[in-house]
Length: 367
Image (tube, rainbow, N blue to C red; front, side, top):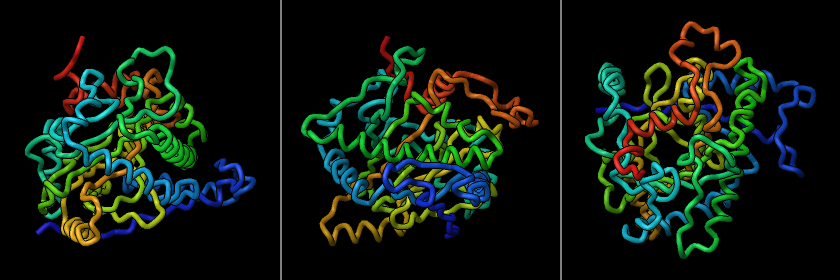
């Protein structure tokens, strides 16, 4: 029997730092003398858990519901309709990614397999036996560079037919979540004893992706079904609003498994590999999986009773370092004994290497 820790991740409230009129976030220690200690708390939680819960008055439940309602309608369409929006030659970094394409990191990474088998049985992830069942839609948010070595990572967005409000809803929700990420990035930088704009400067013109993930619980609703196998995220920080269906578990730095419960009106932020790189491993990319659990089954039953959609849609956004920026340990982290494990390279080169390993780049390449 696998036991899962029900630990509560602390919630950081951004409301005191957001101007009600302009919506601008400020990390000013003159205005907020407690800023330094809150920032230290942000970096501590990210370091120990790889995840963070935040409340941001700029991201409302209404915004999220409007977005989720539209994405449920999109994912409920027949596969042949969604196929029109697939862009395999662009590494599936824009448009639709069907289920059965992305390979979970834990299937191809032998070192990771060794580590997860060393975990006590009750903390081990569900070992995936094939590609992820999840579908995804990738929508680029924010300005793209006019000149870049990484054209595929900075492609034009794809708009599906039959959704006149698509661009407005995607951009509006995407920009709001990026604002939250930027606020957390400033606080984390201060907490890690770096200049506050250390991360946000590198995020400018980054290939940020609003990447709603759809899991068909109507067709694959059995307990133990793996929608997203044990993996880390390859970007900087990942952010999601609360999903209607539970199923996400994360692993803490100490190897403990936690079934995530996102409180109402909160967002979950997870540390990605780019943050690990810039802190020379001081803050590790968080390991996680999405699997049908008993809690998911209860939510499926409730949705059936209320005649709601059985697609589990997560409002996921991947924030990224700009593709042409150099990824390397920053500030005092460059002197870390582990810094050699994180050599300087273009963020785009790192990203493409990772995409190859999880089979999103390469097998459908068009030259």
